[in-house]
Image (cartoon, rainbow, N blue to C red; front, side, top):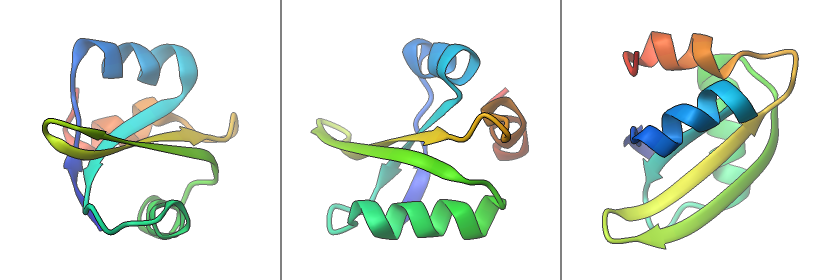
Amino acid sequence: MIRHPYVTEKASLGIDAGNKLQFIIDMRSTKDQIRKEIEEKYGVTVIDVKTMITKKGKKAIVTLSPDDSAEEIATRLGVF
């Protein structure tokens, strides 16, 4: 379902300030599928998933619980 992380300046600010990660995902993905895949793949707790259609495809903004670090996940993904 997840194709790749979506990295922009605004996405980087979301990692630091809001504990959020952004991904480009498959157009057929549902919020529940995204939540499940993120939780299983990275071992974190997802609080919220927002999706939107952009020129690049379908984008998901995933908010992690305060106990988990979006910076750590972003580092493992090679974003930083």
